[in-house]
Length: 297
Image (cartoon, rainbow, N blue to C red; front, side):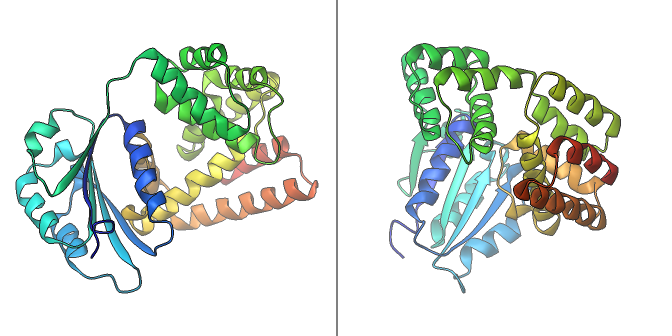
């Protein structure tokens, strides 16, 4: 097993920093068949974890295990020994910087710790994120987005995700257009709609959709993100390790998975597929269709 595929990595920092670093690792393995499982420290199954990392890959090139919220592990020293002995790649993440002292120095682990940032580096990071939309933001525009999103990169990336859906088949004409779209979504209508939908709160959903229409806010991103959440819930019901999301989203998915049956999810999926086909062929009004989608909850 090469160092590249058998790495043991400890990542400490904010959720957005951790997600970025995991994405970089996954990107370096894009040419390999990967058997990946994600574990959460607050519901950690040590026997399953040790079995997974200790067994050889059968239909893949490499096995990878990710432990999230490592600071909540009660027996990390014991688990660490199993990690070191295995040939699987293992990534342990933690939000608490004090976890570094708890984990102790170990030459077997690569430590990636989020550096302290100043405002200049944060604004440069905002520019880099939105560059993927095909527009390079000025520092003034980057600062406006940074402030609008409460200086929180989790929120900034959520806004970028929504705009990525909106601009899937076209590019923004200017940075002002991007800022206007973010301004429309400052109320977090899309995320409120997703949460209300999967909480089966039809009345709340109808209110949010009405407000979005009144404010000339596109409901198309809501459709695609409802579809994404539905797939995540289905995946979680099959096997929680199939879903890899930030912890606060995982908590929502876990809750929704207990409230929705597979039959209900199947009916909802059929409606979403019909809506998707209608929108792509031009035979459906997405606003009307999403309102009709409420009949599935």
